[in-house]
Length: 171
Image 1 (cartoon, rainbow, N blue to C red):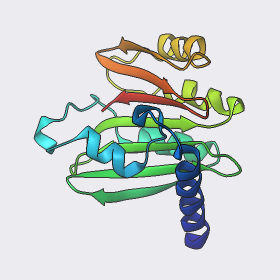
Image 2: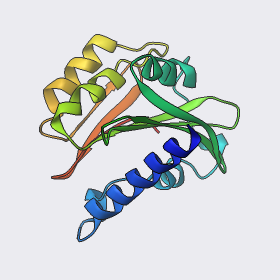
Image 3: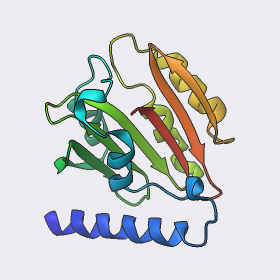
Image 4: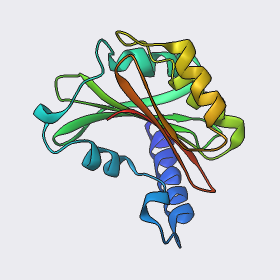
């Protein structure tokens, strides 16, 4: 089982590298988990947590829907949970402080058939969340691949290139 996960991670990294090669715009290149960690924190004390959201609230719901998740994985000064959907290039990274407070959710998909997972991720159950409004906003904007909105005090941002769509929540 562990070998399957390692192979899946290696394949995802290879795809990210291949898809990202030749891009002149570094902001358009796919994100790696290491980049997520590096760009989301310089120190834990500077991070705003997503209130009332625990990692299990996200990875538990994903695992219930067939995703495989690993974590916490230490990426000083933060930790992360990486989730992958079998048979797809869809991935979700949950970034947390070492104390387990969620500071960011990063969902990335490469196939329009997987856009629904970004809409699902938008329904994360934190204090003050607006899951219906957040889901509707993602569904309305994911094809365009850009935009920013705030729901319950947490910022949601859609990013894209020709190859992928990314939803960043918090972080």
